[in-house]
Image (cartoon, rainbow, N blue to C red; front, side, top):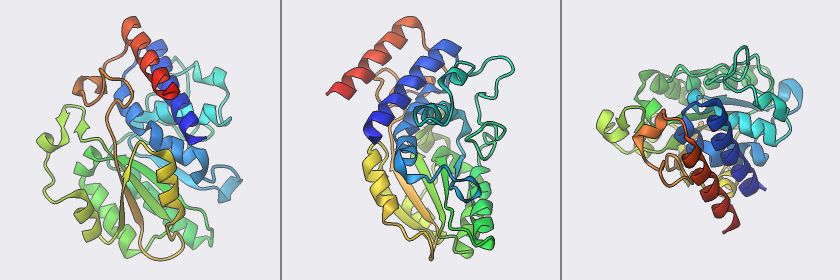
Length: 266
């Protein structure tokens, strides 16, 4: 199920970005499998106040989230056609006024703080809801991420799961060149008191299996360092910095669709 969901999300990303003439395509493709894992069965996304919370900290990849909401019946497909149009709630970053979006995000470095607060609120209310935060490795350049990480570990927020999209690049360059963090990511998160898991970010079923084994009721918070490829599935986008912003022309869109469909059939 998650494989089919991931393909639908990727196709929606390239189709709707082409229709709207907007970028952030490579970033959305980078997290498509991660979002498929969450919306394919990990998230308890329905059920009113007791539902799980999802924070898309790297808000510029929101087209992957919109695609998942449509694919799982949580948003009408006709609403997706308003993406980046005048007066729409479906902008280039998520808005909490939209059904299915709990938190407005896009100011990088803030999502983990929001998630930690939501996880603490669940504990104080005696709720068993979990909180999942999807952030980028480049976003971890922000000091606010590490303040939130230390707080979450201090408070032993076991119901908090951070998923880091480790694609190794950002808007203006490769992350290692923009700001080399020094120690491996696993060592940094462990030093802050988190339980660390390294996963294949393009294996939705594997990601779901890891989450299913986590102790989300007691102990430290959890982080999944998900190894991904920016622009995954579209050969001319993969690991290319320029596709952080570029839109697709007709020929590029046709090639992207053909490659994604071919991969699904293989």
